[in-house]
Image 1 (cartoon, one colour):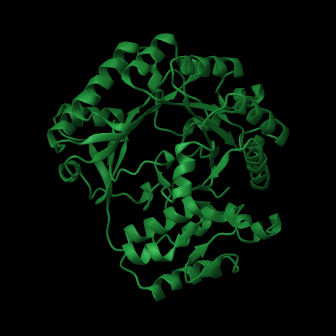
Image 2: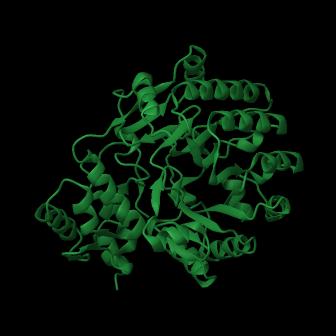
Length: 451
Protein backbone atom coordinates (compact mmCIF):
# COMPACT_ATOMS: atom_id res chain seq x y z
CA UNK A 1 0.00 0.00 0.00
CA UNK A 2 1.33 3.44 -0.93
CA UNK A 3 1.58 5.84 2.02
CA UNK A 4 1.95 9.62 2.15
CA UNK A 5 5.77 9.61 2.45
CA UNK A 6 5.98 7.56 -0.74
CA UNK A 7 3.51 9.85 -2.51
CA UNK A 8 5.53 12.82 -1.32
CA UNK A 9 8.74 11.27 -2.63
CA UNK A 10 7.10 10.84 -6.02
CA UNK A 11 6.14 14.52 -6.02
CA UNK A 12 2.36 14.33 -5.58
CA UNK A 13 2.20 17.21 -3.12
CA UNK A 14 4.46 19.52 -5.13
CA UNK A 15 3.64 18.77 -8.76
CA UNK A 16 1.66 21.12 -10.98
CA UNK A 17 0.03 19.15 -13.76
CA UNK A 18 -2.79 19.63 -16.29
CA UNK A 19 -6.28 18.32 -15.67
CA UNK A 20 -6.09 16.79 -19.15
CA UNK A 21 -9.56 17.67 -20.35
CA UNK A 22 -7.82 17.98 -23.72
CA UNK A 23 -4.51 17.07 -25.31
CA UNK A 24 -2.60 19.13 -25.98
CA UNK A 25 -3.91 21.40 -23.26
CA UNK A 26 -5.20 24.91 -23.98
CA UNK A 27 -1.95 26.72 -23.02
CA UNK A 28 -0.37 25.07 -26.06
CA UNK A 29 -2.94 26.47 -28.49
CA UNK A 30 -1.61 28.92 -31.08
CA UNK A 31 -2.98 31.31 -33.69
CA UNK A 32 -2.49 28.68 -36.40
CA UNK A 33 -6.25 28.02 -36.28
CA UNK A 34 -8.48 30.90 -37.40
CA UNK A 35 -12.05 31.49 -38.47
CA UNK A 36 -11.55 30.22 -42.03
CA UNK A 37 -10.11 26.87 -40.97
CA UNK A 38 -12.78 26.56 -38.28
CA UNK A 39 -15.47 27.05 -40.94
CA UNK A 40 -13.82 24.39 -43.09
CA UNK A 41 -13.85 21.92 -40.21
CA UNK A 42 -17.57 22.52 -39.65
CA UNK A 43 -18.30 21.94 -43.35
CA UNK A 44 -16.35 18.65 -43.20
CA UNK A 45 -18.62 17.15 -40.51
CA UNK A 46 -20.23 13.99 -41.83
CA UNK A 47 -23.79 14.64 -43.10
CA UNK A 48 -26.37 12.97 -40.90
CA UNK A 49 -23.95 12.53 -37.98
CA UNK A 50 -24.39 13.61 -34.36
CA UNK A 51 -22.43 16.44 -32.75
CA UNK A 52 -22.32 18.00 -29.32
CA UNK A 53 -22.95 21.70 -28.74
CA UNK A 54 -21.75 23.85 -25.85
CA UNK A 55 -23.28 27.29 -25.30
CA UNK A 56 -21.27 29.66 -23.10
CA UNK A 57 -23.01 32.43 -21.13
CA UNK A 58 -20.25 34.51 -19.48
CA UNK A 59 -22.41 36.56 -17.08
CA UNK A 60 -23.17 36.36 -13.36
CA UNK A 61 -25.13 38.57 -10.96
CA UNK A 62 -22.21 38.32 -8.60
CA UNK A 63 -18.67 37.07 -9.08
CA UNK A 64 -17.76 34.28 -6.67
CA UNK A 65 -14.21 34.75 -5.41
CA UNK A 66 -13.18 31.12 -5.83
CA UNK A 67 -14.15 30.93 -9.51
CA UNK A 68 -11.49 31.17 -12.24
CA UNK A 69 -13.92 30.93 -15.16
CA UNK A 70 -14.17 33.70 -17.76
CA UNK A 71 -17.22 35.58 -16.48
CA UNK A 72 -18.31 39.16 -15.89
CA UNK A 73 -20.79 40.61 -13.47
CA UNK A 74 -23.95 42.43 -14.48
CA UNK A 75 -26.87 43.81 -12.49
CA UNK A 76 -29.05 44.47 -15.54
CA UNK A 77 -30.36 42.28 -18.35
CA UNK A 78 -29.21 44.60 -21.14
CA UNK A 79 -25.78 42.99 -21.72
CA UNK A 80 -27.34 39.54 -21.52
CA UNK A 81 -30.04 40.38 -24.08
CA UNK A 82 -27.40 41.79 -26.44
CA UNK A 83 -25.22 38.71 -25.95
CA UNK A 84 -28.06 36.32 -26.81
CA UNK A 85 -28.48 38.23 -30.08
CA UNK A 86 -24.78 37.56 -30.74
CA UNK A 87 -25.23 33.86 -29.95
CA UNK A 88 -28.10 33.66 -32.44
CA UNK A 89 -25.98 35.40 -35.08
CA UNK A 90 -23.17 32.92 -34.41
CA UNK A 91 -25.66 30.08 -34.81
CA UNK A 92 -26.63 31.59 -38.19
CA UNK A 93 -22.97 31.41 -39.26
CA UNK A 94 -22.86 27.82 -38.06
CA UNK A 95 -26.00 26.97 -40.05
CA UNK A 96 -24.39 28.30 -43.24
CA UNK A 97 -21.49 25.82 -42.89
CA UNK A 98 -23.15 22.81 -41.29
CA UNK A 99 -23.87 19.82 -43.58
CA UNK A 100 -27.39 18.46 -43.92
CA UNK A 101 -28.98 16.16 -41.39
CA UNK A 102 -26.65 16.83 -38.45
CA UNK A 103 -28.35 16.37 -35.07
CA UNK A 104 -27.38 16.90 -31.46
CA UNK A 105 -26.07 14.15 -29.23
CA UNK A 106 -25.51 16.54 -26.32
CA UNK A 107 -26.43 20.17 -25.69
CA UNK A 108 -24.98 21.93 -22.67
CA UNK A 109 -25.48 25.51 -21.47
CA UNK A 110 -22.65 26.63 -19.22
CA UNK A 111 -21.10 29.77 -17.89
CA UNK A 112 -21.15 31.95 -16.01
CA UNK A 113 -24.80 31.59 -15.09
CA UNK A 114 -27.09 30.43 -17.92
CA UNK A 115 -30.08 30.76 -15.59
CA UNK A 116 -29.45 34.50 -15.65
CA UNK A 117 -31.45 34.51 -18.88
CA UNK A 118 -35.10 35.43 -18.49
CA UNK A 119 -37.67 32.82 -19.64
CA UNK A 120 -38.31 34.48 -23.00
CA UNK A 121 -34.58 34.61 -23.78
CA UNK A 122 -34.26 30.94 -22.87
CA UNK A 123 -37.06 29.96 -25.22
CA UNK A 124 -35.74 32.22 -27.97
CA UNK A 125 -32.20 30.82 -27.75
CA UNK A 126 -33.35 27.20 -27.58
CA UNK A 127 -35.64 27.67 -30.59
CA UNK A 128 -32.78 29.09 -32.66
CA UNK A 129 -30.44 26.26 -31.65
CA UNK A 130 -32.96 23.61 -32.68
CA UNK A 131 -33.61 25.34 -36.00
CA UNK A 132 -29.91 24.99 -36.79
CA UNK A 133 -29.31 21.55 -35.31
CA UNK A 134 -32.19 19.59 -33.74
CA UNK A 135 -31.92 17.20 -30.83
CA UNK A 136 -31.23 13.59 -31.79
CA UNK A 137 -33.47 10.74 -30.60
CA UNK A 138 -31.45 10.02 -27.43
CA UNK A 139 -30.05 13.51 -26.89
CA UNK A 140 -29.19 14.97 -23.53
CA UNK A 141 -29.85 18.68 -22.89
CA UNK A 142 -28.18 19.88 -19.71
CA UNK A 143 -28.01 23.31 -18.10
CA UNK A 144 -25.84 24.66 -15.29
CA UNK A 145 -28.24 26.02 -12.69
CA UNK A 146 -27.37 28.45 -9.92
CA UNK A 147 -29.84 27.80 -7.06
CA UNK A 148 -29.54 31.49 -6.14
CA UNK A 149 -30.47 32.54 -9.67
CA UNK A 150 -33.42 30.41 -10.71
CA UNK A 151 -37.18 30.45 -10.22
CA UNK A 152 -40.32 28.63 -11.29
CA UNK A 153 -40.73 30.59 -14.52
CA UNK A 154 -37.20 29.96 -15.74
CA UNK A 155 -37.37 26.28 -14.89
CA UNK A 156 -40.70 26.09 -16.73
CA UNK A 157 -39.01 27.55 -19.80
CA UNK A 158 -36.08 25.13 -19.62
CA UNK A 159 -38.35 22.12 -19.16
CA UNK A 160 -40.55 23.23 -22.07
CA UNK A 161 -37.53 23.55 -24.36
CA UNK A 162 -36.33 20.03 -23.58
CA UNK A 163 -33.82 20.20 -20.72
CA UNK A 164 -33.55 16.70 -19.31
CA UNK A 165 -30.46 17.03 -17.09
CA UNK A 166 -29.70 19.78 -14.58
CA UNK A 167 -26.32 20.61 -13.07
CA UNK A 168 -26.01 22.51 -9.81
CA UNK A 169 -22.92 23.94 -8.18
CA UNK A 170 -22.65 23.35 -4.44
CA UNK A 171 -18.95 23.96 -3.63
CA UNK A 172 -19.51 23.58 0.16
CA UNK A 173 -22.43 24.05 2.55
CA UNK A 174 -20.42 25.36 5.50
CA UNK A 175 -21.30 28.99 6.38
CA UNK A 176 -17.75 30.12 7.17
CA UNK A 177 -16.34 28.56 4.00
CA UNK A 178 -19.09 30.11 1.89
CA UNK A 179 -18.33 33.57 3.29
CA UNK A 180 -14.61 33.09 2.69
CA UNK A 181 -15.05 32.11 -0.97
CA UNK A 182 -17.76 34.70 -1.70
CA UNK A 183 -20.47 32.17 -2.47
CA UNK A 184 -23.46 32.27 -0.14
CA UNK A 185 -25.80 29.40 -0.96
CA UNK A 186 -27.68 27.69 1.84
CA UNK A 187 -28.70 24.07 1.90
CA UNK A 188 -32.36 25.13 2.01
CA UNK A 189 -31.95 27.24 -1.14
CA UNK A 190 -30.25 24.33 -2.89
CA UNK A 191 -32.88 21.86 -1.72
CA UNK A 192 -35.67 24.13 -2.98
CA UNK A 193 -34.02 24.40 -6.40
CA UNK A 194 -33.64 20.63 -6.62
CA UNK A 195 -37.28 20.12 -5.65
CA UNK A 196 -38.41 22.58 -8.34
CA UNK A 197 -36.25 20.82 -10.93
CA UNK A 198 -37.64 17.39 -10.12
CA UNK A 199 -41.22 18.68 -9.94
CA UNK A 200 -40.89 19.31 -13.70
CA UNK A 201 -40.01 15.70 -14.45
CA UNK A 202 -36.28 16.34 -14.75
CA UNK A 203 -34.88 13.38 -12.88
CA UNK A 204 -31.21 13.54 -13.95
CA UNK A 205 -29.15 15.75 -11.65
CA UNK A 206 -25.45 16.58 -11.58
CA UNK A 207 -23.76 18.34 -8.67
CA UNK A 208 -20.30 19.87 -8.19
CA UNK A 209 -18.55 20.03 -4.83
CA UNK A 210 -15.03 21.29 -4.08
CA UNK A 211 -12.26 20.09 -1.81
CA UNK A 212 -9.22 22.15 -0.85
CA UNK A 213 -11.21 25.25 0.08
CA UNK A 214 -10.14 27.59 2.90
CA UNK A 215 -11.10 26.43 6.41
CA UNK A 216 -12.17 23.00 5.14
CA UNK A 217 -11.65 20.14 7.58
CA UNK A 218 -12.56 16.48 7.37
CA UNK A 219 -15.56 17.01 9.66
CA UNK A 220 -16.82 19.95 7.59
CA UNK A 221 -16.25 17.99 4.39
CA UNK A 222 -18.23 15.10 5.86
CA UNK A 223 -21.15 17.33 6.77
CA UNK A 224 -21.28 18.98 3.33
CA UNK A 225 -21.09 15.66 1.49
CA UNK A 226 -23.83 14.15 3.65
CA UNK A 227 -26.07 17.12 2.90
CA UNK A 228 -25.32 16.75 -0.78
CA UNK A 229 -26.11 13.04 -0.67
CA UNK A 230 -29.52 13.84 0.82
CA UNK A 231 -30.34 15.51 -2.53
CA UNK A 232 -29.70 12.21 -4.34
CA UNK A 233 -27.73 13.51 -7.35
CA UNK A 234 -27.11 11.04 -10.18
CA UNK A 235 -23.59 12.36 -10.73
CA UNK A 236 -21.13 14.23 -8.56
CA UNK A 237 -17.97 16.01 -9.64
CA UNK A 238 -15.52 16.28 -6.74
CA UNK A 239 -13.13 18.93 -8.00
CA UNK A 240 -10.01 20.20 -6.30
CA UNK A 241 -10.04 23.97 -5.79
CA UNK A 242 -7.25 25.56 -7.85
CA UNK A 243 -5.92 28.66 -6.10
CA UNK A 244 -4.44 30.78 -8.92
CA UNK A 245 -4.81 34.42 -7.79
CA UNK A 246 -2.19 35.54 -10.34
CA UNK A 247 -4.58 34.37 -13.08
CA UNK A 248 -7.98 34.99 -11.44
CA UNK A 249 -7.66 38.31 -9.63
CA UNK A 250 -10.84 37.80 -7.61
CA UNK A 251 -9.14 34.90 -5.81
CA UNK A 252 -6.95 37.47 -4.09
CA UNK A 253 -9.94 37.94 -1.79
CA UNK A 254 -9.36 34.43 -0.43
CA UNK A 255 -6.77 34.17 2.40
CA UNK A 256 -4.09 31.76 1.24
CA UNK A 257 -3.08 31.00 4.82
CA UNK A 258 -6.52 29.44 5.39
CA UNK A 259 -6.03 26.90 2.60
CA UNK A 260 -5.35 23.26 3.50
CA UNK A 261 -1.91 21.82 2.81
CA UNK A 262 -1.50 19.39 -0.10
CA UNK A 263 -1.45 16.50 2.40
CA UNK A 264 -4.69 17.79 3.94
CA UNK A 265 -6.22 18.14 0.47
CA UNK A 266 -5.61 14.43 -0.08
CA UNK A 267 -7.35 13.67 3.24
CA UNK A 268 -10.32 15.85 2.24
CA UNK A 269 -10.63 14.10 -1.10
CA UNK A 270 -10.41 10.68 0.51
CA UNK A 271 -13.02 11.63 3.12
CA UNK A 272 -15.50 12.66 0.43
CA UNK A 273 -14.62 9.69 -1.77
CA UNK A 274 -15.32 7.21 1.03
CA UNK A 275 -18.70 8.78 1.72
CA UNK A 276 -19.75 8.53 -1.92
CA UNK A 277 -18.56 4.93 -2.11
CA UNK A 278 -20.37 4.02 1.13
CA UNK A 279 -23.53 5.44 -0.43
CA UNK A 280 -23.11 2.99 -3.33
CA UNK A 281 -21.87 5.48 -5.92
CA UNK A 282 -19.48 4.20 -8.59
CA UNK A 283 -16.11 5.90 -8.83
CA UNK A 284 -15.72 7.44 -12.30
CA UNK A 285 -12.17 8.39 -13.23
CA UNK A 286 -10.21 10.63 -10.89
CA UNK A 287 -12.93 12.94 -9.59
CA UNK A 288 -16.49 11.86 -10.54
CA UNK A 289 -19.04 9.58 -8.92
CA UNK A 290 -22.27 8.23 -10.37
CA UNK A 291 -25.20 6.04 -9.40
CA UNK A 292 -25.30 2.43 -10.54
CA UNK A 293 -27.76 3.10 -13.38
CA UNK A 294 -26.28 6.40 -14.62
CA UNK A 295 -24.97 6.73 -18.15
CA UNK A 296 -21.41 7.35 -16.93
CA UNK A 297 -21.45 4.07 -15.03
CA UNK A 298 -22.69 2.18 -18.09
CA UNK A 299 -20.03 3.86 -20.24
CA UNK A 300 -17.29 2.97 -17.75
CA UNK A 301 -18.30 -0.69 -17.66
CA UNK A 302 -18.56 -0.83 -21.46
CA UNK A 303 -15.18 0.86 -21.99
CA UNK A 304 -16.81 3.89 -23.66
CA UNK A 305 -16.05 6.56 -21.06
CA UNK A 306 -14.65 9.78 -22.54
CA UNK A 307 -13.14 12.98 -21.18
CA UNK A 308 -13.70 16.48 -22.55
CA UNK A 309 -13.80 20.10 -21.41
CA UNK A 310 -16.83 19.41 -19.17
CA UNK A 311 -15.08 16.49 -17.48
CA UNK A 312 -16.18 12.87 -17.91
CA UNK A 313 -18.87 12.04 -20.43
CA UNK A 314 -20.63 9.12 -22.08
CA UNK A 315 -21.06 11.17 -25.24
CA UNK A 316 -19.64 9.38 -28.28
CA UNK A 317 -19.88 12.28 -30.77
CA UNK A 318 -16.62 13.01 -32.60
CA UNK A 319 -17.32 16.75 -32.78
CA UNK A 320 -17.94 19.23 -29.97
CA UNK A 321 -18.85 22.74 -31.14
CA UNK A 322 -18.44 25.62 -28.71
CA UNK A 323 -20.64 28.69 -29.21
CA UNK A 324 -20.03 31.94 -27.36
CA UNK A 325 -17.02 33.89 -26.12
CA UNK A 326 -14.00 31.73 -25.10
CA UNK A 327 -15.75 28.47 -26.09
CA UNK A 328 -13.54 25.66 -27.34
CA UNK A 329 -14.51 23.25 -30.12
CA UNK A 330 -13.02 19.85 -30.82
CA UNK A 331 -12.90 18.23 -34.25
CA UNK A 332 -11.06 15.17 -35.59
CA UNK A 333 -8.66 17.72 -37.12
CA UNK A 334 -7.94 19.71 -33.93
CA UNK A 335 -9.17 22.34 -31.48
CA UNK A 336 -10.54 25.82 -32.13
CA UNK A 337 -11.21 28.49 -29.50
CA UNK A 338 -13.36 31.59 -29.84
CA UNK A 339 -12.05 34.99 -28.78
CA UNK A 340 -11.96 34.97 -24.96
CA UNK A 341 -13.15 38.57 -24.51
CA UNK A 342 -16.87 39.11 -25.01
CA UNK A 343 -16.19 42.38 -26.85
CA UNK A 344 -13.82 40.78 -29.36
CA UNK A 345 -16.17 37.86 -29.90
CA UNK A 346 -19.13 40.17 -30.43
CA UNK A 347 -17.26 42.33 -32.94
CA UNK A 348 -16.21 39.34 -35.06
CA UNK A 349 -19.72 37.86 -35.15
CA UNK A 350 -21.29 41.22 -36.01
CA UNK A 351 -18.75 41.52 -38.83
CA UNK A 352 -20.09 38.26 -40.19
CA UNK A 353 -17.28 35.89 -39.27
CA UNK A 354 -16.46 33.37 -36.57
CA UNK A 355 -14.35 34.76 -33.74
CA UNK A 356 -11.89 31.84 -33.73
CA UNK A 357 -8.68 33.30 -32.35
CA UNK A 358 -6.52 30.29 -31.53
CA UNK A 359 -6.46 26.53 -31.52
CA UNK A 360 -4.39 23.52 -32.43
CA UNK A 361 -4.08 21.45 -35.59
CA UNK A 362 -3.35 17.82 -34.70
CA UNK A 363 0.04 16.66 -35.92
CA UNK A 364 2.67 14.05 -35.24
CA UNK A 365 1.70 11.82 -32.32
CA UNK A 366 -1.00 14.13 -30.94
CA UNK A 367 -3.91 11.76 -31.52
CA UNK A 368 -1.96 8.76 -30.22
CA UNK A 369 -0.83 10.52 -27.06
CA UNK A 370 -4.29 12.04 -26.54
CA UNK A 371 -5.76 8.54 -26.50
CA UNK A 372 -3.07 7.20 -24.14
CA UNK A 373 -3.76 10.02 -21.70
CA UNK A 374 -7.54 9.73 -22.00
CA UNK A 375 -7.37 5.97 -21.37
CA UNK A 376 -5.39 6.53 -18.17
CA UNK A 377 -7.68 9.33 -17.01
CA UNK A 378 -10.84 7.29 -17.70
CA UNK A 379 -9.89 3.66 -17.12
CA UNK A 380 -6.57 3.79 -15.21
CA UNK A 381 -5.13 1.52 -17.87
CA UNK A 382 -4.05 1.43 -21.49
CA UNK A 383 -5.15 -1.47 -23.70
CA UNK A 384 -2.25 -2.28 -26.02
CA UNK A 385 -4.45 -4.12 -28.51
CA UNK A 386 -6.63 -1.04 -29.00
CA UNK A 387 -3.66 1.29 -29.39
CA UNK A 388 -1.86 -0.99 -31.87
CA UNK A 389 -5.08 -1.41 -33.86
CA UNK A 390 -5.95 2.29 -34.09
CA UNK A 391 -2.59 4.09 -34.15
CA UNK A 392 0.70 4.08 -36.04
CA UNK A 393 3.01 2.66 -33.40
CA UNK A 394 4.79 -0.68 -33.01
CA UNK A 395 4.47 -2.97 -30.00
CA UNK A 396 8.13 -2.33 -29.14
CA UNK A 397 7.67 1.45 -29.24
CA UNK A 398 4.56 1.22 -27.09
CA UNK A 399 6.30 -0.96 -24.53
CA UNK A 400 9.14 1.56 -24.39
CA UNK A 401 6.65 4.31 -23.51
CA UNK A 402 5.21 2.10 -20.79
CA UNK A 403 8.62 1.25 -19.35
CA UNK A 404 9.71 4.90 -19.30
CA UNK A 405 6.54 5.87 -17.42
CA UNK A 406 6.95 2.99 -14.98
CA UNK A 407 10.57 3.90 -14.28
CA UNK A 408 9.53 7.45 -13.40
CA UNK A 409 7.26 6.04 -10.67
CA UNK A 410 9.64 3.57 -9.06
CA UNK A 411 8.04 0.58 -10.78
CA UNK A 412 4.66 1.10 -9.13
CA UNK A 413 2.77 0.54 -12.35
CA UNK A 414 1.97 -2.85 -13.84
CA UNK A 415 3.26 -3.35 -17.35
CA UNK A 416 2.45 -6.44 -19.43
CA UNK A 417 2.08 -7.30 -23.10
CA UNK A 418 -1.61 -6.45 -22.68
CA UNK A 419 -0.96 -2.91 -21.53
CA UNK A 420 -0.19 -0.56 -18.67
CA UNK A 421 -2.24 -0.58 -15.47
CA UNK A 422 -2.36 1.84 -12.53
CA UNK A 423 -2.92 -0.07 -9.25
CA UNK A 424 -5.70 1.31 -7.09
CA UNK A 425 -3.33 2.59 -4.42
CA UNK A 426 -1.40 4.60 -7.04
CA UNK A 427 -4.46 6.34 -8.49
CA UNK A 428 -3.78 9.65 -6.70
CA UNK A 429 -0.80 9.87 -9.10
CA UNK A 430 -2.91 9.43 -12.25
CA UNK A 431 -2.51 12.96 -13.62
CA UNK A 432 1.23 12.77 -13.03
CA UNK A 433 1.40 9.39 -14.76
CA UNK A 434 -0.58 10.81 -17.67
CA UNK A 435 1.94 13.63 -17.84
CA UNK A 436 4.59 11.01 -18.66
CA UNK A 437 2.91 10.62 -22.06
CA UNK A 438 2.74 14.38 -22.71
CA UNK A 439 5.25 15.43 -25.37
CA UNK A 440 4.72 19.18 -24.93
CA UNK A 441 6.62 21.73 -22.85
CA UNK A 442 5.29 21.21 -19.34
CA UNK A 443 6.50 24.62 -18.14
CA UNK A 444 3.48 26.23 -19.83
CA UNK A 445 1.05 28.01 -17.53
CA UNK A 446 -2.39 26.65 -16.69
CA UNK A 447 -1.49 23.62 -14.59
CA UNK A 448 -2.85 22.98 -11.11
CA UNK A 449 -1.97 20.95 -8.06
CA UNK A 450 -1.75 17.22 -8.71
CA UNK A 451 -4.10 16.57 -5.80
